[in-house]
Image 1: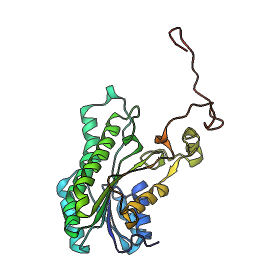
Image 2: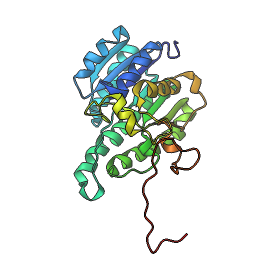
Image 3: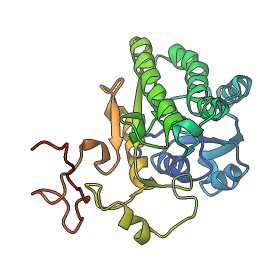
Image 4: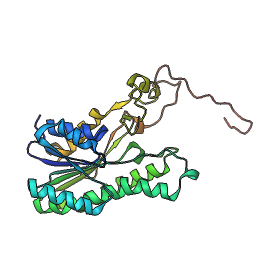
Length: 272
């Protein structure tokens, strides 16, 4: 406990889901946490965390709103030690039915929002010669996935920007890393709020054999926010139940038991 004692942290997209779980863990570890979100629900979430938490409405795609927020945090707390760029949106749509406006909407939040956060907070961290920026990418920022062209593109961009920021800011004592969650049970990924037991059935092809939970992902953010990760810069931390580790040849040794291999019918053109 107290891994983040005395640190001041900003967490975006913190009204619910993974962002709320990160904020809870940060407070439990001794941090003062500024929860931000575009949803009014963020105020109720912060209220449950006590005096160490405060809430602000923030549209991460609005550069001026970022300046107002950061100025307020510096005026009140004097420093910013951790920034978690967690806010993001998801859209399932195949390539040919994704419009340019759809793409822009995803990029504005997932990419521009992350850029705005880093660019606004970094000068203050440079002055104090310390800080940790954690960008929430995705397992889909490490590999492709059908029906997610806009989302995958945005999360690859977050991954790339993290590398550049890590290179530029490390000499100033600032660590920048990305987290890549996959298969986490959040309102964004599970809008129907299906029960965990039902979700687990759909995850039998994951090495973990189950859906992940926001609290499990939050532990990775605690590590990267803490001094324990002092030599981690530009790293990619996958918290995805093994999704990006590789793929199974079902029916062969080492594959999950009870999962039927996909049916395959050879055609005349197949070669042995």
